[in-house]
Image (tube, rainbow, N blue to C red):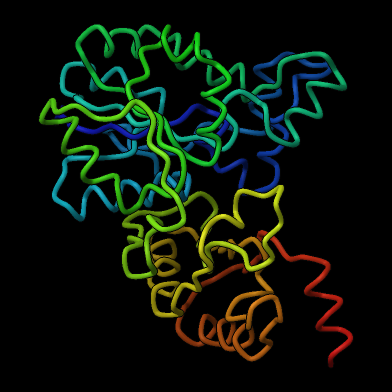
Length: 320
């Protein structure tokens, strides 16, 4: 088995294509109700197909970005399914873990927890991963553990687990730009901060956002980052607004299609704000994006949107 220096992974609730139903994954934010947990997990997060190295055919989009950034820099890094981490105990030097809701403190997990008084599946799954003999063996061998992603802030509410599991670095914010230097320092055993916060000024520009090299879960493709609305309760608005060029979007779509993933999902805080002028939708830009996708790709079975706001729909309706 070929060794990997940097292994990127997450728990089962994230490493799944959710039976090709993207939003079926949200069932993992609830506790198992009226059925055994294994059955509940099968319904919302079945195991993905993997190759002989344990690399999943599809992986969470955010992890794919980190993988691409490291590989572009010549670092030996790959996403590995959590069930295959044992293959890399003797070779891995850095274990990177990402998640959208590590400890079920975000919505809708927190609402389910409040209503049922039971721990949601995603929290249970993450704890099982971190308490696994494989992760413990890696830590005993001196592997550096880095955690990040949209829910990185939740580790600040679990300081005991940070110590218990030996978390070396917590990265909050967009890591595309800083991850290469961070990993190189860890590989060279240089000191790094325990907590890294990537602010708006350090966020990557469009040109600094890497292009994924392998399929994303259910063909998820980012078309925009950030949001122009400035809502104080939302961390996304702390990020600068960037519209991903159509050429880059097409490249990621075709990477998915060439690997048999024919269901594409446009991801943005609001798809209708693609190419917008501030908070004012730009119908021409949205229409051009979709026409270019239809024109320049083949064999797409479906094209869906991850998010669209009522505000944009109402504005467009009133101004047509």
